[in-house]
Length: 519
Image (cartoon, rainbow, N blue to C red; front, side, top):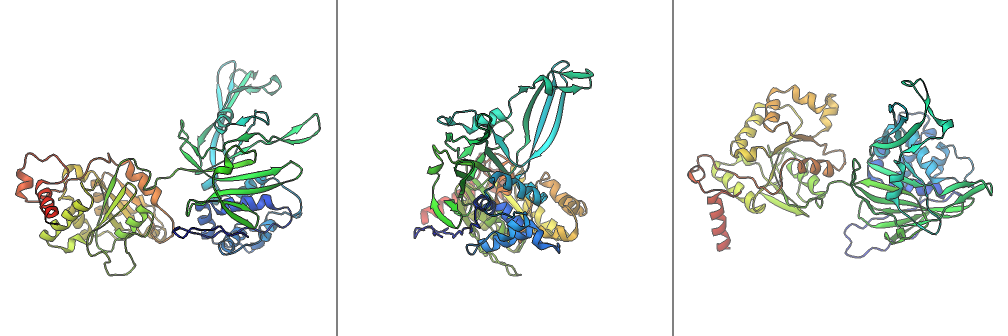
């Protein structure tokens, strides 16, 4: 195995390992590396708990063992080949076929990541009746209608996939309305796109003149992104399986972009080398393409998002801040002691998060000073407020804290509050959904109603990254350019001033201005 060289300033250096070729199992190795490097799939496999006594035949158990070993060293695929019923490891097979076979064998666990829905529609040419049939898919086959010496375009292939066509007369469909077989038009449209969109090129076709399969080696520039189009979300390329050689004999390798550090690697059986996306340009090798649905990250925003974290003590505010920013930026630990003693701020890309101490342990003067700090740290002020509470018995005291805080905000700011429930694992223990949990707590229902029904649940103990889901929800809350005003209750300047139009109150703005001058 070749270890990729890492620069000394690479903070996210990671080590990847290869898979031993048992004979001609490069097709399987390439597929397994792609699955291993699919974050959400790897997480699902590693969380799996088996109650199957026939573990040798359980593909999930074998994948779990393989992934654990592959995280530490070069390993073999013997357990997987046995569970898939592969008897002759010296016989070359098709990578796409085994990709589909593995995922279908695994069932729902794999489908939640890779499965989409398409509608096959047939239309009667006489009465115009449409007959839709919904099916699921794991991958989409793209026909190649160009000669070997010409460039192929993936977007054109996707468009061709959904083109309308007229069936030959022998294939006409019976129409109930017309009570006979009629001229039939047919087409396919994608109804639901999966988290991972898999495309494979129809490179191998049967040549009836030579009575053998031939490979179309047309070249293409593999698109690194598939832009949002109609009902299709945006996608980003993260893996390609290449096929070298002819149909009767060839070799598979995988080029994959790591979700851990953003670096491209070439996985060639037991050999792993660092590479780039350059080999994907003007290449005749790409056979299967894997695209991940673009997710929200701190860099997804075109305008600043400034978030204020608040809520009762030890509710998990710092943990939520780390989830939003996608890293360990705020100190946090389990236990009864509050870690955050004063306001802290961290900014990643366009997202700024202000973490607060327990404001409700402070007197009114200190509370005002902390809010002043929040405004200064998130200049010109936060535009989203997250009220963090753990999933537990909701008390009258917690309800009182929420309303105490809410009263300090103007009407516009009150429309910016979203409740974040932490310790989502408690729902599993209770055997309830979040809606059922809320419905059983009258005081909590009132709080949720005050937030116009905005809430989100995270389980900060399961190791899952909730960054994308949470940011996506926050992005839909409200315009990001407006900051929140924090009036002080019974403040003469706040109540009497008629000139206030900005996000920072006049007296706070003056205080900050004077402080900056002093500094």
